[in-house]
Each structure stands twice: as C-alpha cells, then as structure tokens.
Length: 262
View 1 (cartoon, rainbow, N blue to C red):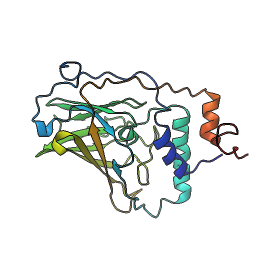
View 2 (tube, rainbow, N blue to C red; view 1 turned 135 degrees about the horizontal axis):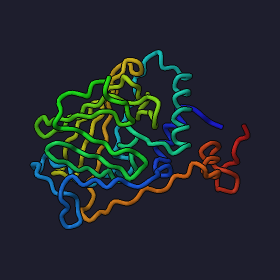
View 3 (spheres, one colour; view 1 turned 90 degrees about the horizontal axis):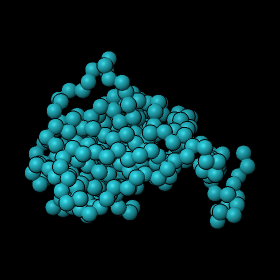
View 4 (cartoon, rainbow, N blue to C red; view 1 turned 120 degrees about the vertical axis):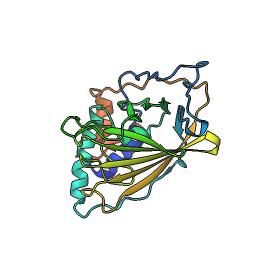
C-alpha cells in the first residue's frame, strides 16, 4: 500500500475526474446568447468569458519547486496521506487542483466578479473585482479556494488569494509543496493568440513551504461556442473496487501487474 507525496501528485493528475461528485453548479452571471458562452461587456482583450480546456501534455509548464529545508520527505508523505484521504472520501478538491481539471473550466465575468466553475468535485471560485482588500481573518472562515480579489492591470487580470484551509481538500501544488493557512497565491490571467488561448501564471508564496516563491504556468484553449457543460462523473467513496485500486494499484487480471501485498 503506497502513501507517498509522489503518489498523491500522480493521483491528482490522473484521477481528478474519477473522484468528481455531486451536481455541477450552473453559474449565470450574464445573459446567455444562442446557447453559447455568456455575453460580456468587457473589451475583447479582457473578456475571459467562455469554456477553457488544458490540452494534451503541452499546456503546462511546471518547474520543480524549491522547498524549505523544514519540508522533509516525512513531512511531504504525511501531507500526502491527508490528501489521499480527501481523494478516497470524495472530498471537495479546492485550489490548486480545480485549475488542473481534465474537463473545461467555465469562466463568467461581470464588472464586479469573475466566476470559475469546474466539472469536477470542487467549489466554484469567486474572484471579487469590487474589493481591494481581503476579508479580515477574524471574520473569514478559511476554505479550500480561499478569498480571492482581482484587479486589471492593462489587459492582465491579477488575482490575489489568501485564506486557505490547510486541512480540507487536496493541498498538493504542481511542482512540489502544498498549501497552508499562510499560503499566498497570485495569479495572472491574459489572453493570447487573439483570444484563442488563456495564459494563467501561478505564484505561490509561503515561507513554511517554499525556499523561494514557486511559479508555473498553464495555458488553456478556448472551446467552441457550442460546447455544452457536462455533469461531473459520480464519486462513490463506498465503492470497494475503486478504493482497492487507489490503495493498491492494478489488480491481477486487469492488464497490470499483480498488486503487492502489504
């Protein structure tokens, strides 16, 4: 039975669809036109509205994180066991796993808010454009997505997020490390190729985890206007076959090597 940090990072990438559950939240923050993405009054260079999908292999540039000396293998493995439990029991994923969704992200925006919904088991992200400061820590209950505020700098949307819950969801960060209550995430959203590609850079800062800030980039391709959102696949935490597969890997007769005995 394996429970290492590397295992969980692989699980997050390969099984995020398999652990999806519940009903997809339908977000309507602008009028629908012709069955396609919601209309937006934003200038074209700032109009992020639409469905966006990571493409095969070439859409993620993720260098290895420089971790703090205090983040030992034992610490990473302990965190991985907590993440495995969240996957095992179909918990809400949260950030940053939601942004790695193997299905398209649904982005809608108005002058006051940008909403990011995924077709996996994750709470919808809300980026508030009408606030310049975060909610006071004494008043805000930490969540898997944190508290996000945004502002435009030219044609780039800057999203600042704090207030993460370190004990819920999948905490693993692409490239290494994990989110904590003190993690600070800065994202930069900008359109490329005449609006056909959405570049998002992620910069994580947390002195408890990283020696230096950890930055990586995802590039999403805009889906056709006639794309229709799908309900997420069901996740059954009481499915014994699923549980055994997650815990032990391929079984004899499944086309893989026999499972190792504990």
